[in-house]
Image (cartoon, rainbow, N blue to C red; front, side, top):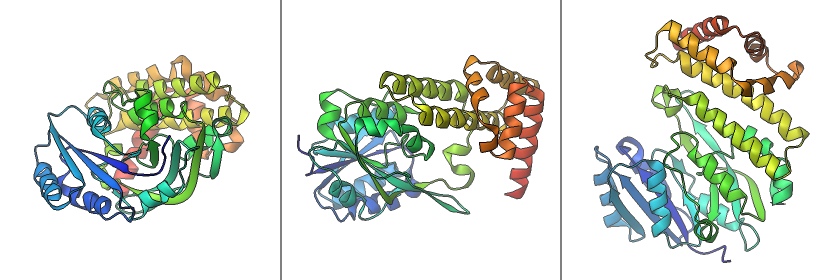
Length: 340
């Protein structure tokens, strides 16, 4: 299995004209020169297509595919199909990568390693947050899975953009991004891929720049069915660890606390001003969440190890105080918007 060699960098594009030039410039200026850049224009209606065509006419290693709008997952799958590199890297069209990202990822891969993971930085209007993997080095799959939730908690597992994949592993096993999953398709792709790995290398470098600017960030938008999707991610990860004999005490504790933080994110989503539901309907949505059987897992969390606000929320969840949760997050959201 050839590890080093050409890298196919796949970039799905949809109405990204505002940030697209910065993104593409960061990719074409990579210090690693054996790359092909595959841009999949997913039916953009702004100037994205024009920008893509301009870059294609300038750089010979760019392939441009124009298709009807089908979603990011389908665009990435198309990029995989036409890729010719030994390795595959994904970049989102409103983000950028450090000029030596591909070089450093390739330097860390060999015939025994099927995946390289690096850190990334989240760039917001008022701050920059670096996310480090936390534990570094090359690990066989068993050792990696035994500390899997450490990486999940540090937010470096979910995304496909802070990783270098081996093309043969993807194509031989017919792995793809599920177009029917609207949130978390990267995570499910990564679970599939990791199960096919023998060794994984985690490096300390923070090389990917995720642009989350103000309220334009997708993380600030209201997401319908967010709880159901997050619950599915949680249940699949728990099942994944159990099937791989890795649901140990450390992974379990981290997963429990992470699920509490997931519930908090779901409550904040329900209170989002973009949610058109009336107050009574929002309270009912909260009630559905706290009455869900999956929530029982947070009973085992040690209160001493969680923040005071999260401790309050956990108390209200356990006591089924849906109105209290509604008031708590409504006030919190109001204060945050006034502060901003």
